[in-house]
Amino acid sequence: MWKVSNSSSFNQFLLLAFAETRELQLLHFALFLGTYLAALLANGLIITAVACDHRLHTPMYFFLLHLALLDLASISTTVPKSMANSLRDTRAISYAGCAAQVFSFVFLFSAEYSLLTVMAYDHYVAICRPLCYGTLLGTTACVRMAAAAWATGFLNALLHTANTFSIPLCQGNVLDQFFCEIPEILKISCSRSYLQEVGLFVFRACLIFGCFVFIVLSYVQIFTAVLRLPSEQGRHKAFSMCLPHLAVVSLFVSTVMVAHLKPPSISSPALDLVLAVVYSVVPPAVNPLLYSMRNKELRDALRKLFQWVQCQHQ
Image (cartoon, rainbow, N blue to C red; front, top):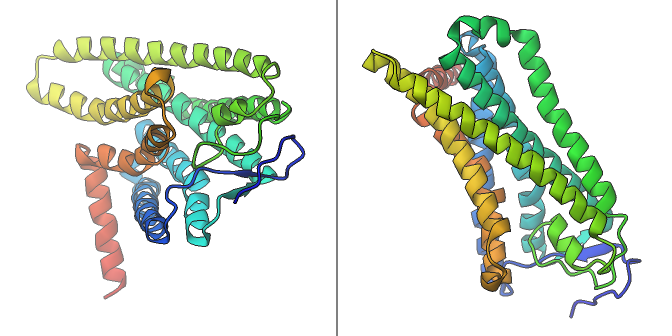
């Protein structure tokens, strides 16, 4: 029987288990392992292809490389610990480990959203202002925008993590989630101590909404410009460039909105667990597929990479 602490002096948290029986725990381990290895392979291939193929050394693929790096790091933040707990038949995560997980998840989550906003701007300039593309998205500008996305995530994570773990915890150490998540930690905090964190959430919500509006407005102008193109081939090329990014943004935003904005009346630990898997595990594994399906340049680069590897083993 797990002991629940009544103070904030404990040195570990207890995460929500996927299953109680040993067979289901091993099934969870196997499913997560397969998903994790698939995400590592897919994102690793994109990183390698973009880095090695000089034809992909453009702003769009530069940002795609950063997106793959963020996806790799994001899924590595939550899944390995969950797999280890299932394999060892435990629910525990240390206090320091929980803080590190919160920081890493918020950092990578925020940086990815910022990067998706930057990628929307890249597509806008490429389609709506092509003559200015080299000026507005030169090497220095791309590096600065990518650095700004990572820095935004770091600052956001630093503020939220420092504030969350400065709040006294009065209602035990059991978290109803398979990884350390700020809303779950707030549920076990002292009732009057989390107002500052709520204020930070409101501030972050405003930033998220601002980025979302920017993405929407960018795509309104993009589709308006694309529909005016006289050439069907030109329209097809523009749509092929934009649709993968739009699919990634839609998956990212929709899963988070469903997980965090659902009515409290339908909330339950089992549903929250499934939704958390959907928004924290599925996107990093699916994003590489979304980007490679309609991208001929990327598929050609991956084919060349496979052919080179095959030649090395002959």
